[in-house]
Image 1: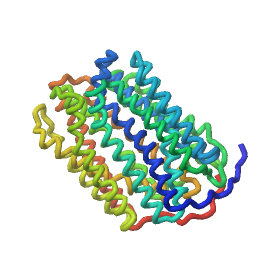
Image 2: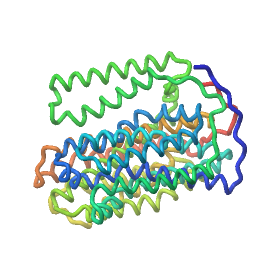
Image 3: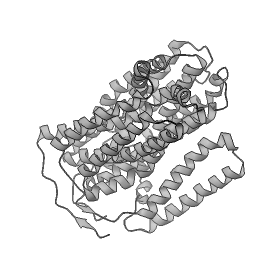
Image 4: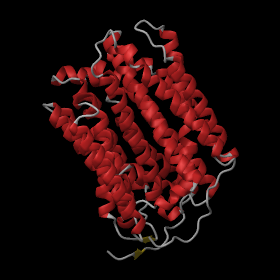
Length: 472
């Protein structure tokens, strides 16, 4: 496939630019919400479809695995064929898959439909960010827009359990999928009216071998984490999966390093700021998803709370993310990523440490404080991570740039679900609190990792000036 050159898009008015941001944020809220809204409904889904914790893990991770695996290619397709076109296609696929989820008669159908949701969502996350970046040519305005975008995405994930709990209490677990349809219809209409078409000025070849190898690496890595407790960590099947991951990773590095236009430019990871942003994204979303799944199972199985009560318990987390995410975006624009990253690491560490001695009857006050601290940390983390990662690449490759960060997020989400589920799969309700303690240690460790990344981050924003796009 030959390289195609497209003209630069016209400059939009200030009102139109911020309207485009609002439309993209609406769609991204939907993607983030579906990453976590199902968590609080897992016990109800398990009861309704007659499936245990192991099957429920795949219900969540089928979505995040497919999303993580396809994000970069979706960004590259959008750069070549048109971001609005791919964005609208993703919305339609997402809505159709949501309808199948809502009427799924079995867990197998539900898992397959969740994977299809991930295909649709992969066309939304990096493409929305690319649309926003290309609509904002001024570096300062772009940094503010990215901060808002990241804040909305983070808020949607934190708000998922609260929204899910309320829907399940009122309408049952299938309603968490029905709710997607009217939101998608609104997003489709608004996109057609307000979002202009855009492409990378020079869109190049697609790296199908790299895409296939990346899918194997992500799928096998998370698969062994989910299946490990069941098949045994040293069983022949587990050893085979380890080998698959190692061989696929080596092949991926070899293929990508030899291509002129690779799926993922591995040279970027030699830059500490970019590599730190990607690692930080994995850490933050691992911590968030460990928190959400352990919270759901602990409160509903051990303490026998209703889905609504379990969802409401995460309200301090959602409030913390809501208040601190826009504040973090402003801080990034003023002083750079170091301070908000340090605050994120400190609060995540504190929240995890609050629950490392979790008991069956730990006080509700301590639970709420811990969730609030984790929410504040999560709120501070997204804007500096997203801005730093996107600023590390030319604006013309915004689709691929956003996809790398989004892949790291979703990979972290899948890893978090797999680890948390593995910790408590075999635990009965009375033992679940004790079994979940390593998960809270992991949350604190993710916070400590962010502190190290903050120390290495530059004190000022490194957003590049817009310039001519290199050939892909």
